[in-house]
Length: 279
Image 1: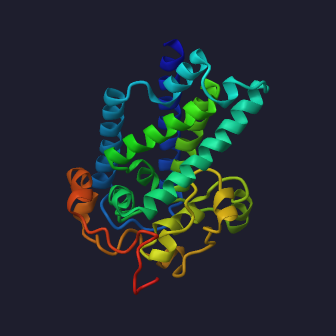
Image 2: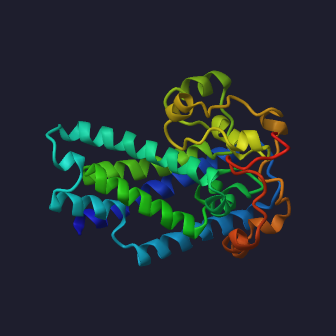
């Protein structure tokens, strides 16, 4: 229990620090001009992550780190049944979990029913650090279930799971940042981490760009599986953020985010859905 309590403190501390640093960076050197009043968007996006966190803690209190503790006690999973140095088990676990998140992300773009949940993330009319936490509650619960299943299979050290969670949250806030990076620095960083310039393409209103650059943390999977797109067709200043079927500001209000999957128009964005327009 001490491990789990420490995990919560570590994750929350990193979340608050990175959020504040990214918000300051955005204020000093914004990449794009925002189109919706920040107070409404921020209140709704941050309100959603608070609601999701409380719901997940109530419904699935064990969590991914708790599953790692249980797997260790029961001897479940790969790394609890082979002899490898702890540092290597942590490293391999982080990489394997990141691959799982990449594949999960592709799945949520491929299956129309799952896309209806995921479109809440893409319907945001602006792109900044708070977009990184804008996910429907049902998607968060499904994602947590997938992570727990992966932890059960891998049997990673508990601090490997904590390291992955902290890294994923931090890099997700970074690559959703409305911040300006020099071209040379962006090129270098893209070798090891998903950058804002890389991930912003994924939030384009154009279907072919929405279905690219799925990585949140490591960029390698997009390179390896052919889902990488270097730049948006209209450029970062000229591209439209969001979805073509949701252009009204009400989609950035908390109550509508929760309801959007149940009445919203999914459109032709899912990967396996044919469309006359391949933009």
